[in-house]
Amino acid sequence: MRVEFTKMHGVGNDFVVFDAPVPDALLSPQRLRALADRRTGIGFDQALLLEPPRAADSAAFYRIFNADGDEVEQCGNGARCIASLLQRRGHSRDARVTLESPAGLIHAQLARDGEVAVDLGVPDFDPRSLPFEAAAEADSYALELPGEGLEIGAVSIGNPHAVLTVASVESAPVARLGPLIEGHARFPRRVNVGFLEILSRSHVRLRVFERGAGETRSCGTGACAAVAVARRRGLLEASVRVQVRGGALQVNWAGVGEHIWLAGPAEISFQGHVEV
View (cartoon, rainbow, N blue to C red):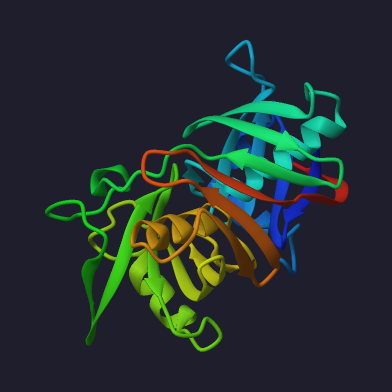
């Protein structure tokens, strides 16, 4: 069976988008891992499956699968790409699109210059929301790794994030610490790991080791998590430019209890098909 797809990216965080229905075999972890391979497959950080809306006022329901084949809860840049794709298909109203995800409703705003902003809800600092094993909610947590200890922040942006502040993202040991924190026993469902360098109160640099995908060129929920953790500590303003390896994202967050917004470009790379 031939299955059409659209390849997209948001500042280097890349996706393959399928429209339901698709054969069950396409969504098997083994098949998704093969398609995610950048030499012998399509190559992507996440696969996104668009399904018919379940609510009357939404344009689509989307599911997210990491490059390792695991299904996960949320993807900020993926949501922005889907909103852009649906706008191209004529599903937006007044440059707005409402989407449904496993983490809840997502409201998107689309600009004429190709920028897409999405409301990713209220950051949840309760350790149980990630989940993360901790005695109580705190701004920082001590995390023990083999031979060393670290201080991290932890927050859910619909999916779990640990944030580590570093002096320089260029010299940060992402390849070494990323897998150790991602699979730490205190994160029973694993975790995305952000390495945050604060340049000013409105400008940061970030690298993210994503759960099930490794280091990516950008991570939308990771950008929101990093800003939320640092702003809660009083280190950042409400509007922050997040420099990632694939470009730049904008995160706006008024503070605890408020919705967090992620903005940036979303682009189509190409369209194609796979045989299943």
